[in-house]
Length: 282
Image (cartoon, rainbow, N blue to C red; front, side, top):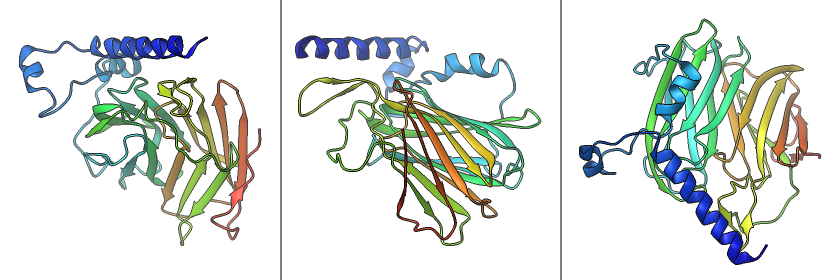
């Protein structure tokens, strides 16, 4: 397959995705006139809502229950920080959180399953933002309550940004970085998380998709969180969780990628070198 043909395939694929997203909503002439001055269209949410939640009621106003935070103008659309915070009424009661980036090629960025009773009060991720969009978090409690919070992020090209120039390290390398009081733990995986929309700047070739599809966090031998993810997570995916009490030891992170189905895992014990890697493996 020659380079010109590969480039043509990428252009066609991106245009098809753009048209598919545009078809999810019907814009009025007034909305088209406003453009991006106020807000972008609702994107994928109009289609995903009935698929995922039917006609169930979704709360949208109680910031004390849950909030979402992201920079309005992201300094890096390929690695935009995103923070979810849960209030006292929500901590330990959330069983699932879905993260939807409306105008990304793959809008459902992550589905997080939380173990009931684990006092998670903050989750931090880094995500790709392809263009001006609403970023939504929809949480479901054990008793079926649904709450959604959203924020606007202005960005361009996060899903097609070329990979980092740094090639150091080993694929699947996992690092743990705890807070001083051990109530927060950041876990990162060295992985390109290629989106399938990127071009290698050195060769001009299309870069095929290669991304972390699943992560599992266990503490003290018990599963704390399962995360189904995809191309909307940034290169070298990072997950940080904060809890009101320290997690039981040891903490293990397991991850699987697609399309290779490679498996990576590492375990951390309190008192270990916080900045040192724990050996990922395939």
